[in-house]
Amino acid sequence: MTSGRVRGGFNQYGFSVGILMLDTRFPRIPGDMGNATTFPFPVRYHRVAGADPDLVVRRGAEGLLPAFVEGARALEREGVGAVTTNCGFLVKYQRELAAAVAIPVFTSSLLLVPLVHRMLPPGRRVGIMTVNAGSLGPEHLAGAGIAADTPLAVAGLEGEKEFTRVLLGDEMELDPDLAREEHVRVARRLVSEHPDIGALVLECTNMPPYAADIQRETGRPVFDITSLVRMAHDALAAGRAPRPA
Image (cartoon, rainbow, N blue to C red; front, side):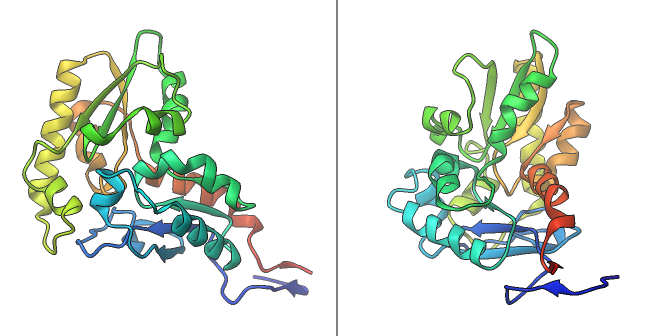
């Protein structure tokens, strides 16, 4: 219960994290970052017009930085305490987006890779699962602060038939069961080819619905963007407006 005088300044209250959303129409099931039921606390969404999934992933988000900067500033004006994005490939703009606002910005779960690597015993590597491995380049790893000598193993779902096609094609229908099978199959293959993988990081913000299946099938810890959102919320929640006057 709130007691005493409090100070306002915003139109709405109760959310800690703002999410910059791609301009999409494909289905977002529970667990997906774009489904508000994924989080046990309110989040604030901002849709970035023109941020087509294929443009962001396969074409390097060319020309979109100003729109994402304005979106981050809009969320800041609305009172969020931190900003994240709805596509891990936007980590290439981590520095620019963080510089554009006065609140924390975390563009991608790839920011977790250095931390996860330091958690592991010597001789272990981090496995990365991504929507499209061919599009994940040095600029993304550098944007996430991943050192060039960090041992990694990367696998994409672009060779499968359902998940990547629906997301990057922005299609209206998704079969979650097929997508789940694809994630498990790719994860199994990744750890089979690289048994020294100590943990997995899911680059794509649409992969968290399948994280538990990947954990069960591989026996490895799995980190994703929702891990970061929950961490940011916990770091912010008690200090959000309205605060004592």
